[in-house]
Image 1 (cartoon, helix red, strand yellow):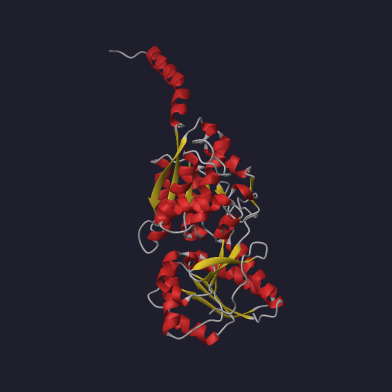
Image 2 (image 1 turned 180 degrees about the horizontal axis):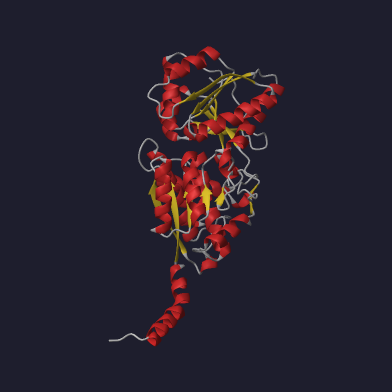
Length: 414
């Protein structure tokens, strides 16, 4: 059989006529990619993130009476009730693996957006890949300040970064000093990836600006087998406050080594990460009564906003634990992305990017103690107010800032 030019043209016309139907069919589900460490030392982070995203997807896809975007009614009304489908990728904590997995999610899984990544070092490569493909990326739980300053159009971060978090710590120190508490010397302890170095740089600058003396600034190798030499230096410095920036396994090793070497700091004020994780407190919580960590989330908010407790209960049923600094940010990241896709009425990258840039979400429509969610020209939400949480009697209570605090801080640590 001979195929004529007329047959080709008729075939093309038929295909074109079917295109709107195909496009409509594709919007029966919206595919979103999530990349996390699902194996290796931080695998539990990935598992917990999965449960947080599953909780958010359930609220979006089903009908709930919460004052959250997309909770009421099923699916995304802007796309005819399309449901969210999540696809996970394991970056194993490796930036290059993160780059490859982001590319796979975009080219093979056909995701319209990516969320992640826990480690800031991985967020660097994943966000660059998203930029290349013009796919929106939400930095759900990365806190390195340099991430939003790279001129990327498709990068968005709803939560605070470490300059904001560290600022909250120094505001807290200033408030303590005004009440007559001695807080003069600081010891910085940080791992050597972008998270640790950016955190330390922010703290060094704030210490100089606010008149605090940094008596130790110790950078160590991430996932180090021993921290004995570093802890000896911390012990010798004997600062008023120890300020660690460490992921979970390093945090556990730090606390165990401190106990072995008899170093008992007067106070620990941590840059969350491992110090917000249940695994750390399961391992060494008996040595951390009174430790303070910064956070984005406070479960105390449930007293003012009922849905916070209800959503926490949903997450707890899936994970066996309460929402924390990481999982609350992950939960909100999916709500924010889905809200933008819904307003865009499209899964087109540029349209979703424009909708994200136009986001204005009031505090009451989140589970966070923030003023609101709205992004500046670099994709950063500057209305994400941090809190400081103190570990007392096996749970965290908010001790700063004053308007969010439910308890006075215990100082020094017990």
